[in-house]
Image 1 (cartoon, one colour):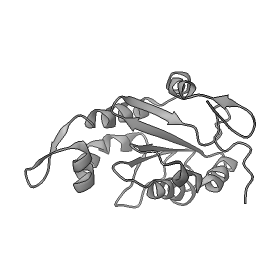
Image 2 (cartoon, rainbow, N blue to C red):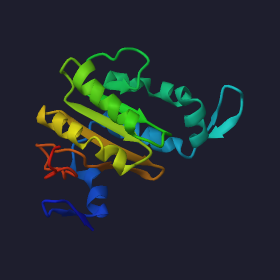
Image 3 (spheres, rainbow, N blue to C red):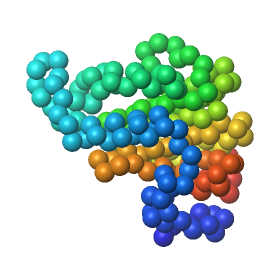
Image 4 (cartoon, helix red, strand yellow):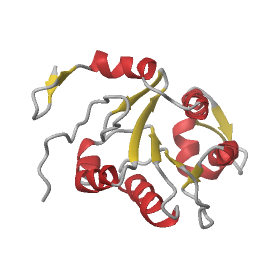
Length: 184
């Protein structure tokens, strides 16, 4: 069992139960299921080679990313090769990368710069979790929260997904890994 500086304790079980308790837009559920399903699939690459998910996402990410265009009907899908349109929500899909620095930068840049102050919620959907990469952005996450922009982090696995609580969502009483942290 782990705790934070305020003495509030939480367990892996309480985190796993969070998808049942919180408000997730239908499109986020559909997206997590679609990505989770890719883990057991094989993909035909441009050279005709049939590759498992981990090879396909590293060698030809556009092969998988092109299958997600439907997300643009609900949120701004990032990364994007074009200047993103202002939307209320952003979905940063970060797959196959070992570091999360790029995902954090996309989420922050969109929420604070490219959305025209419209973005109220940014989702990072990824297949890896490296706490130090995210903790490096704790002041940025707190700054988003100060502006009432919520950052949500969904870790996707072959068996499903779970949300790792990063920032305060005032309406749901979500746990915060950064509650009580002093700013530098």
